[in-house]
Amino acid sequence: MKNAMSLHFKILCLTLLLSPMSVGSAKNIKEISFFQGSWEQALIEAKKQGKFLFVDAYATWCGPCKYMDKNVFTDAEVAAYYNSNFISYKMDVDKETETAEKYGISAMPTYLFVDAAGEVVFRKTGAMGIPEFIQLGKSALEIPALQKKYDAGDRSPEFLANYLLANAENKSDKILTAASDYFKTQKDEDLLSETNFQLLKAFAEDVNSREFQYFLNHTAEFNEKYGEAAGEVAYQVLDKLYAKAIDNQDVAPLNELKSIIGRLDPIIPKEQAETITNSAFLSFYQQIKDWDNYALAALEFFEKNGTEDSEMLFNASYNFYNYVENKEYLSKALNWMKNSIEREENYINKYLYAALLHKLGNKDEALKQAREAKSIADKDGVDTSLIQSLIDKMEQN
Image 1: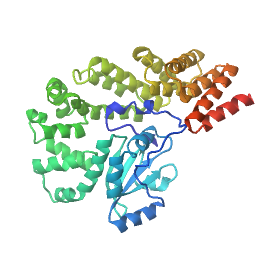
Image 2: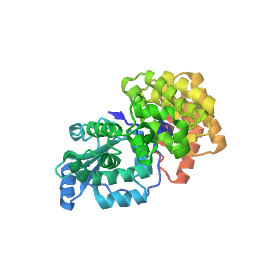
Image 3: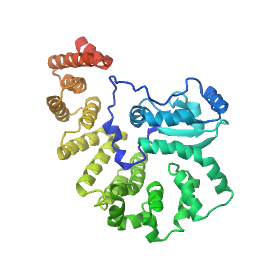
Image 4: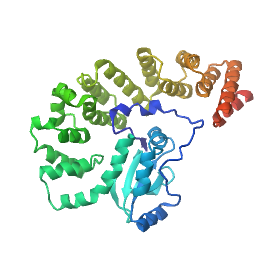
């Protein structure tokens, strides 16, 4: 199963921003309350309370899943809404493989809204922000009544617009067909309207579609009316190209992505577009585990963009430590961590600095730095097991 990177192209870099290890964190008590019990028991509870079952299908190794756990599920507004309206259930796809296969879960995170009979009412894949996640839940609750009307044959543009707005997070074949039918009723000049703009953000996924080509040829008008939000029309298409590159392990869709981004000025200024493109290539090579090209892309990225982003820098350095053997490249990563420590010393960059020193053969200094990292972590009151395992490894050698 694969790690899903969706919703907005802006979070294609999410796995870069998330540390691949966890050495301890504070826990927010205001969070979604996930049902403690089996899948069958969760369905029974949902039926008993007359609610849908919200399912977070995740994997322990999934970066976007960790992002949702840390930044979205722990939001007070999210927690209040989901705890009031749903029975929530976490599904570890690597353990509950039979259930995951039954529901066709092939990317994480996947969110399912399931009725008491176990039928999926609504589904969505990918990390997202707080407002989008709350809207996801609202849309799931609105779907049954709207779906009944759609199935009865209502195809008026006004109804289709409302139906699609409620299904903005749903990309099933049926919904995409409804979107295509709706856009056929709209003239080119109508695409700048507020309603159509919202629908373009959700459903303009085909780079060759009339709607997206109109957007590309009128970026100035969209930018004037909607500002930075106009970029979200392009993110859907860029997401598709990125996913295609990952699925096929083919860099060609990324080159097409690069071409499209180059046409989005002033919505995405050229300097920002270059940074996003470089990040996409870096993330792509990480996702497909092409570590040789990943290393070259990382070196190019940080040379062009600097090393101020400590989380991205840590993630790249950690990947170098685990997967790169070229000592020249490892020395670059060592310098990244050294500069990071000089800016702001913490147990994370000290830990990785020690690990890189050890891999480069400077064992005495590595052990010293690892012990200092553990001391800082102890003072911060966080889990030090990973650091301690590194120290144990060094002392055994």
